[in-house]
Image 1 (cartoon, helix red, strand yellow):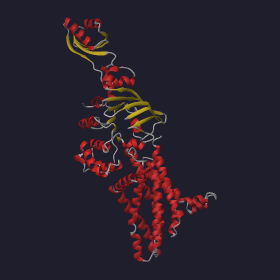
Image 2 (cartoon, chains in turn purple, orange; image 1 turned 120 degrees about the horizontal axis):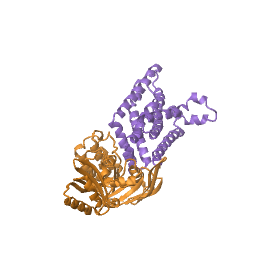
Image 3 (cartoon, chains in turn red, yellow; image 1 turned 90 degrees about the vertical axis):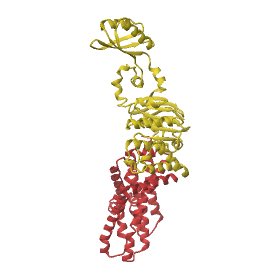
Image 4 (tube, chains in turn green, purple; image 1 turned 30 degrees about the vertical axis):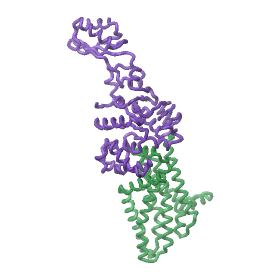
Length: 238
Length: 331
């Protein structure tokens, strides 16, 4: 635990020591607020659904940009060699790095609370769905982060890690979309609709917290963190 | 402290380390020397549990590198080649991080950080970010990092590469100092460096250990004949037969003749002093002017060439072929 904490602190600080965190937070909020308020006044309803609905697509580009450096950079500069010869277990480093990126996402989510607050000033939104929305956002964000982190373990090139991260998230996201589901064979339908990254999020957004949805995101996150650990370990055998 | 038995590792079809075996103990400075790509780094990476060997085994500080990787790492301070560090971290911040992941008790961290700052001469740069540092200081921060937990074993991969002569000497002195109580295993491809710092030399070539011993031992192994360099003024047609007639001398080759001065490379099977005395007396009797008469010493470069090519080259050759083994090293 202490080791995970040390890695977490180092990585989290590294986000805020560099411009990454500030640029990420600023542009994430700017773009999501713009897209949200574009339609907010037209619909004339005091609700946050528009904001949360955007998230799977905004995450697609923003999340891999946070995770792309986590391993690729270490491997490129060679710092991985010091890091992986410290008395740490590989999974501790993987989890520490994941938590740091999750921390950045959580800070961003905290700043985005300005939106529901404005909506509350303008009208009377349903508090329950907003809380559910944030819960879903963090759960889904964790899954995106784990996928992005895994992409970063594959390569030492950050741009490749970024694009691989987007692609992997994209594929996992669209297999749960209606357009794709219509054209999938029947036997694949339940698998795709279960695995789709956005499906469980939409059901959380409806304000129903089902343990299956939570388990889905935790499982996806755990699975990709496990794959990342395997990738990091694989350096030894190649 | 380090026991290596028939370690073998290949990258695809390339055999990087081939049945390497050696021992090393506390209080030794072991120089791991060989040309680039000889397998030095791979061996070190296996010993620090960064990579896993295909075959063979190694114990470091009594722990097997495969089964007790964490315990091995706790006992080893490692500086990889070219000191890769986080450029965006401050020097002290970095050392604090290292002290934390090295699990130093909180109460000792500050003191330990100050100690390594002192040992590695980092006082002048503690305010700076690592990214702003020069190569030499970066190397020192890397060294400080490897010393932070006061490990019994230090493994340093080319700790002096890219440093200027003053910095090189500082790092070498530090290595010698550390070697008094710790085991220091460091790699280099710079030959004079090993002679200057190591109590023992491990020579590796194409993945195999080709020599293992003190500098003196290695010289003895190579020394099969002595060579004498002679520059003399006199009639060449008289001198050559006279030299050839001398008992002690087994081979004579004259090379350059320039306004009456002849240069000879002479080999002798006997003690070099016998031969030089005989040559001196002959020159005296015939009233030739001796310009230069000296025994060639066998140095590390000859030993290295001897082992890496499998033949004993003439010491006089050592200016050309050695340049690729020890690139311009100012002493």
